[in-house]
Length: 145
Image (cartoon, rainbow, N blue to C red; front, side):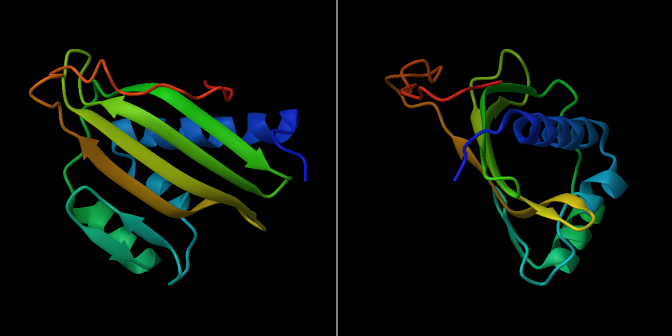
């Protein structure tokens, strides 16, 4: 199996960036369109769980938008062959925010294009001894964007 075929990595990076732009702009139609329309799709949120595309669509319709000041860091996109990829990133809701978010997605090339088949979002709270998360491990030697 080939890992990070350049043109496939470029495709997934572009669709990931398209998703992020839609998320910050609260473009619900684009966000919904980038998830696989299947009852097998799932999304684990910071305080909720959606099983199936219909539940994800209902969540998107009702949830508050993310902060437009959201900033990504340590994004790692890895492709496996031509039809499977993972995208993992950390984010902060604002540049000076101490709260660190984590987001992971599995992308699969479907006949209609790249789609998210599962996603996970969680928070890493600062600890009393490390109130800015600066001591979190950064041991990745993989390509980051």
